[in-house]
Length: 388
Image (cartoon, rainbow, N blue to C red; front, side, top):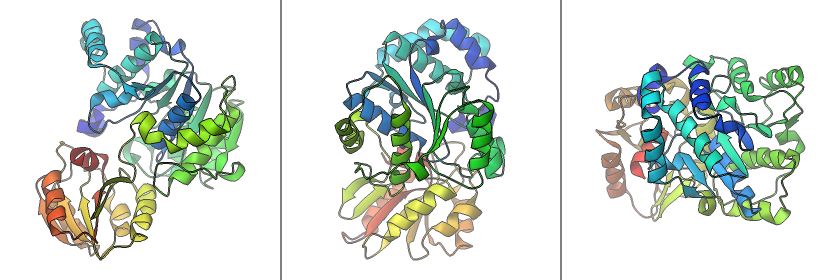
């Protein structure tokens, strides 16, 4: 499981998922889909699309990763999570084949999702890329349209250490003559996307430059403005699906209610204002920290934990030096030891106390806070997951 083991669990080829899909009678060929990739924003964008299409009256599958509280969050239809019975029966029916072929956790999960959506006869499924794109297990689908949100420095050991190299991996989801929407125009990556799209005769839209977004959404992060533009770009090019202006408005206003999305500038408490956000790389955290510093507060308390492969030199300078920190170790083997995090943070004038687990850190932050303060919880998806 990549979330636990990191790069050792990453399958760098599509042989496994192709084999599993063939065994399952190629369920991914039995439903229509939208493929969503990118570094930041692909989860939020996937949930927005699912919410809007649900409002339009369609039966919409949604596959995302990782989960925060419950494995079943990864696979849902119109906001209803896959049942425990469906999960267990899939494993019981395929267990021998899975063990025989040593599939990764992600390959099995993707196979389960595709099988479920086919059996449930969804009208369309929103499929979020797990990691990268070109070699991601989800990349066996032929979607109606692809969406790539933005490109940032994440998983560089696997995807490459330049934006251009990372963009090339993400561009792997662009299919022959299938339209692709790029949410955010970036001068380093635009030529890569344009070249791949041209080579594959795929119509390409850069939504940031061509879409006017004046819609409100229930998702409170500043970064959602760019995500909305990408979503609108997809809907403008999606054929054979009727989506009205009202469907878009209601879908964006009811994302959380319709899909259960968590961890995106999620308000856990009003006094003190307590926010959690899964942003975990330079591009995502820079926007989140800007939003955090724009809030009115007497004092900021930050519960912070990260994984071992995180580029601390890139993210720690983004955090406010005036905040009080509650450093913590994640409850996974990939978690960076809290002592290392605290010592490294000192180099950037970030000071606080260390805790052996996330919830101890959060409890201490609550005890030290007044109602006029702000508590922010983040640095990793897994910090947010443990608090939730």
